[in-house]
Image 1 (cartoon, rainbow, N blue to C red):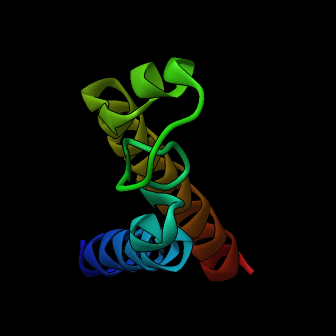
Image 2 (image 1 turned 180 degrees about the vertical axis):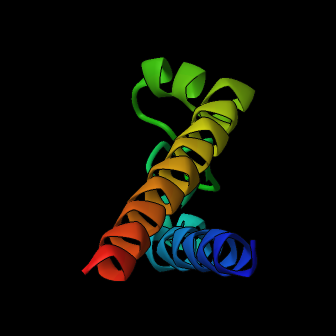
Length: 93
């Protein structure tokens, strides 16, 4: 049980670090602020948009946040399955 908790927190930490590394805060220089890994769930700009089509692509997208959380949950499950399987193989040797 302790191993499952450690692996779960490890995966959450790695996922959080990847979100932090891929975070972009360039809105102040006419670019975009983007948050989310692997899906961008928040995109905003402070610059002028020359193409009005971009306006529909800006803002907060809860659908992508839910996708990110689902990817995290699936990754935690797969990582725990792999660690459990490797641990059982090591004890059987």
